[in-house]
Length: 115
Length: 112
Image 1 (cartoon, helix red, strand yellow):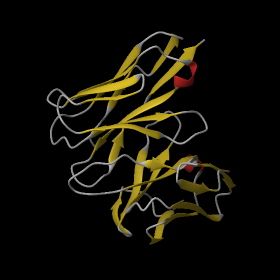
Image 2 (cartoon, helix red, strand yellow; image 1 turned 90 degrees about the vertical axis):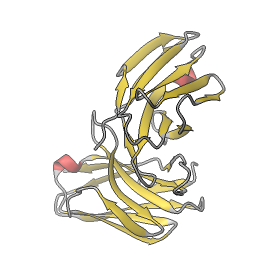
Image 3 (cartoon, chains in turn cyan, yellow; image 1 turned 180 degrees about the vertical axis):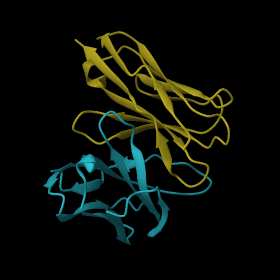
């Protein structure tokens, strides 16, 4: 248990489905992140929420829609995905302060397969 | 996007060997450099966050150094054990906030 919980662990969805990924942290962190890892590629930043406000949308297609209802929860809503969106989606949280840098605490990820 | 490069891509060593790998990054506008260990089927785990040129950090048999002027960091593992087998990621802080840009990782396999 890392302190960041992601559900589901595995998800298979059709291209016309709508699904959501959930991330939850109870570490008192004030920033949460979605990262994507495709095969043979580095982790790619998708979205950042700081103090529940989205501060980064890293040119992610609109078929991915994040939501951060409070500082402990983060969702990634998925609709009309493409097979190339199949990847590992990782959630992370951290304590963000301008004067210091802190490591991330990651969840275990959701392995998404789009068929 | 500021590229972070890691080498080698993978490494196979025998138990007891010491090993090291490299993380290279643009040296301009440096804020911090992170190292993570990612074991198969687990979450990436933070090892070190380094901010100052010449920083050295140590955690058990693992240590890291930082050279911000030339843009590189080394991770050392002394006396590798099979449980050290993992992917080691480095990441650089962007210019503001705590957003990280990750390298592709070095895969370490330690054979007993």
